Image (tube, rainbow, N blue to C red; front, side, top):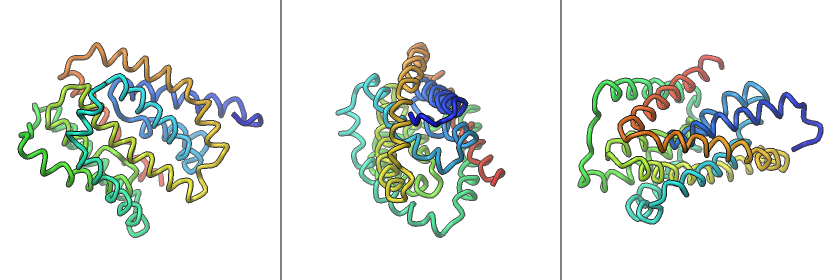
Length: 251
């Protein structure tokens, strides 16, 4: 941690990491989306973006180890994971051609509507015979949306929810997708000069509250049945929608 960093800044970063990690442990998603607003208020968005990469990957790894079924999940969903990468590259290219904040606001509205409808209804169930051909399409679309808006959850999250996976397999699948996207973003931020030695050191020191928050959240998740877990994920999805719309409103 840089010696000249004010204590209040250190406290803001540690608090953001812990809260985001708790959400991550409880629901399996949302570290970057939960941490960025708090970090941006304290140190600005550009400085905050590289600070979430390493802790996000670490929180992904913690929940993936706890979830298990890694080899099974990779074998089942590898076409979707592979298709995410060219989609992300295309999305980053399109970022220069569209208004990213406006696109994020539209996505936020979609997340809120989808979450609200799904909470009121049991939700659609996707037959296994349809899931296989759809998987690479979903992966590619997720990459494009991620590149333009920074959000990693659409449409991969509703796709996996519709498959009615048990919570552990759901968490494994979506966190592999998140990890691939985060690695590509790390390369991009380094190329842009935002991923500096200082940001890496801050991120490494932040792994302590990240570990504690993720473990605590995981204990909460272990007590949830599958339907309660599904509803919690949908609520988080709606909160993400509010955050995305709020970014556009504050710009």
